[in-house]
Structures are given as structure tokens and as C-alpha cells.
Amino acid sequence: MHRYFDEVHAFIRTNDLFDRGESILVAFSGGPDSMFLAEALSQISQTYKYSWNIVLAHLNHGISDHADENERFCRLMAEDRLKLQLVTRKVSIPEMLKSGRFKGMSIESLGRRERYRLFVDTCAERHITKLATGHQLDDQAETVLMRVIGGSWLTGMSGIPVRRPLSRNSRAEVVRPLLRVGRDQIEEWVESEKVPVFLDPTNEDPRYSRNKVRHKLMPLLIKEFNPGAKRHLAALGQQAQELEQELSKLAEGFLEPAVERGSETVVRVPIEKLRLQGPLAQRYILRHALHSAGMPIREVTHRRVERVRDLLGSERRGLVVRLSDNSSVLLDDHDIVVKLAHTTALPEFITPAEFQISRDGSWVADVDRGPVARITAEMMAMPSGGANELMEAKPDEVEYLNAEAVLFPLFVRARKDGDRLRPLGLSGEKKLQDLLVDGKVPREQRDVTPLVCDSSGILVVCGQTIAHRARITPQTSQVMKITVIPRAGSSDASGFLPPVT
Figure 1 (spheres, rainbow, N blue to C red):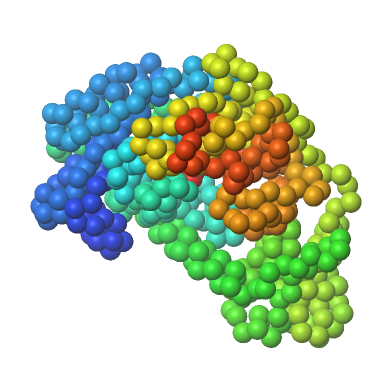
Figure 2 (tube, rainbow, N blue to C red):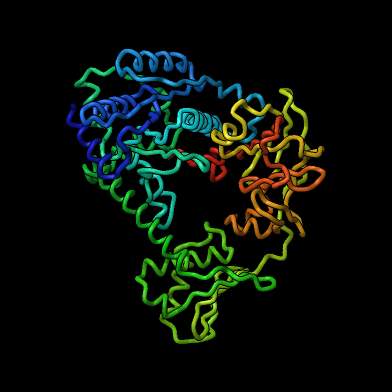
């Protein structure tokens, strides 16, 4: 077994990535990283008798002129060299964009979305519990560098996680076994072992920010400042991510829930209890307090948090610090009291929109503001496996309704005073306001959370739940599929699937 595969094996064991006999799906492009990953897992499994069931998955996205050639290469490698099963799917991302059904999405975000849709579907269909991707040490370092430049707090230094859920409703995880291996090691393996690889021309395209970092900024740092910059950045990213997670858990458990008082939201932070924490923990607790009161996270700056933390050294009870036009902090006898006044200006609501019939027979409603660009509805028959089969492979951006419970016409709107519904699985009605708060929907997003409605009221609270009355039952024969399509440039550009990092 190649010595670099020993590095991968050690990382797998340290992080407990795979169980013996586990099924593993490998994201496979035929490039150096995915070839290295597939061979490493295959040889490790054979050498140590782990009995892993390794399956490869490749999406022919149709974006470049080389897409079909890339698929043929992957098939050849899977059959002749790796001796592993290959699952492929062919789509045409350019044609999908032309159809108008994915309004507002970029070619990159739609390609990423379709690739992960293939992974989610394959894991569900084959009962696979792990998706392994070829992200390696250089990818980690580049990610950390890009986030340090553009971010703040420890989140701004966090790199690619070693593991994360594949999607909200999937039991599978995404794991990254190569984060200890550098691109130079993989390239050395390719050259020394004479491994055929498929090189994607888009990896050299200077229009993409990552390629600028990869081919310009990182080489400059290595040459002019520190030859070990990549490994230091990768280690920093992993440590920052782990520390961010621990501090966020501490902050969430430290505070009592926010209290609504008339036209303002109040969060209280016990002074003496806060003083017992270290400086970094204090900052994260105060950051969480400001965000819990309703301040958008992008406005919870390090400078504002420090202004609040300065109150810990003051004996002037009754002192008020104004952070913005609608937020202030009061120092009373026992607490730092964070107050955020509700805006009196009219919020920007979604403009109500009816669903229109499209060329393919589905219904489409465009959403004029907020993170969602479009919502589609289409009829489908219940699959032969019934509700279990339907729900097992359900993507996060899709909801399934009992079509017989839907009373046309369908339309999309924003929330309004008095909105109530019986959410799926609950025995009684609930205020929509309470549902959004419990679902941790930020205050500034609640008025642009789309509601899919019919003549009887709310059917779907996008990203949260459906109405219990429209649930799938054993008697359901006709299903309505609701799909939410995100707006390009939103914080979750791949829909409700986790970002591909």
C-alpha cells in the first residue's frame, strides 16, 4: 500500500470516519483528488479487511464540451482500474437554466445542487451512510484564507468540516478523509504510479475567486512568507471550527430565552455569572445575546460586542449604551440588559403571487424578494413503495402533500397578523409567529418566508413544515410535490441542501 494511503488511514482512524462493513459513496470526477480517494479507500479496505462497500457517483452536468468525455473516462476507470460500481446521472445545466424554472440561480450553484441531489438520492436508494469527498489539505487552506479575508469571528477562519450531515432529512454524513494530504502529495502519487486522470479546464479559469487564491495568492504566501503556510492555515481552520462549535454551545446554554415586551425584545445577561467566564467566552455569550434579541448576525460586529463587554468594568448602574437606532444595552444592578426595539417602518413583504401553469404542465410562482426565487408545484403518483419510499429519498427543498387535500387555487404570500395552522404532527393549532421563532428563523427573514396557501389557508411554511391536513397518509394515491428554488447569491445558494464545503 502506498505510504500516502497510510496518512489517509491514520486520519480515518483518528476521526472515526467509517465503521467496518460500511457502505461508502465516493464523489467521483476522475480528477487527481477523486482518483486518489477511490484508490486509497479501496486499498485500505483490502489491506485491513474493513469490508467497505465502495460505490462511485459521477454527475455529467453538460456544462462544458468535455462533459461526455469526462463521463466516459470515469466509466473506464471504474471498470478497468478500480473495479468498483459507478452510478452516473446526466443532466444539462445550461438547458435547465434556459427553461426558466430555476430563475435567479447561477450555473455553478445549480450544478452543485444537482450534484448533491445525485448523492442524496443514491445514498437513500442504496442505504449508504457515508459520502466521501476528495477535499484535501490545499482545499482546506484555500477555504480558510478566503474566509479570513471576507469573514469575522471564528466562523471567518473555519475551514471545511471533517464531517457534516449530507442533508437535513438524510441519515448519511459527508466525510473528508483527505484533509491531511496535500495536493503536491497527490500529484506525486499520480506521477509515480502513472495514474490516468481527467483534468477539468474550469480549475484554471481565473474568473473564479478560488482559482485566484490557488494560483496567485497562495503561491505568493508560500514563496515570500512561509513554505508551510498551507498546513498552518489548514490546522488553523480546523481548530477555529472546533472552538466556534464549543463556544456557540456554551453561549446557547448560558442565556434565558428572549422576552417580548410590547414593542421591544429583551435579553438579560447576568453580570457576575458572565464575569466568571474568560474573555473569548464572554464575547460569544454577548454575541448570542445581541442576535437573540433580534439584531441581524451581520450587524453583530466585534466592535459592538466589545462596547457591551466594556460595561463589565463599570460601576455606573443605569448606564445605557446605544448600539444602533433600534438597539441599546442597559447596565442595571444584576444584569446587562439588551433591548431591541421593533421597527415602526412597514416591512418589505412578499408580494402575493398565484401559481401559473408552465410549459411542462407544472405550476410555477415567482417570489419577488427574500432568499427564495421560485416555487413549483406538480402532480405525481404515489410510488410503489408507498409513503416510506417517498419520504426516504425526499430532498430538503421538497415537500410532499396529499393532492386530494389541496383546494385550488394555489398562491404564495407572506405572513399576516393572526396566521395560525396545525403543523405536521401536532395535535392543535399554533401561531405562525411562534412556529417561526421556535424554528430559529431570524426576525428579518420572517416577513419574506414564503407561505404556500390554498383556499383553506396555509399549506406549506417554506423551509419549516407543512399543514397537518395536507399530510401524506396510507390512503394517498395522488401526491403534490412542492419544490423551493433559492435565489442566486442567497446565503444558501444550493437550496436547503448544506453548502458544498
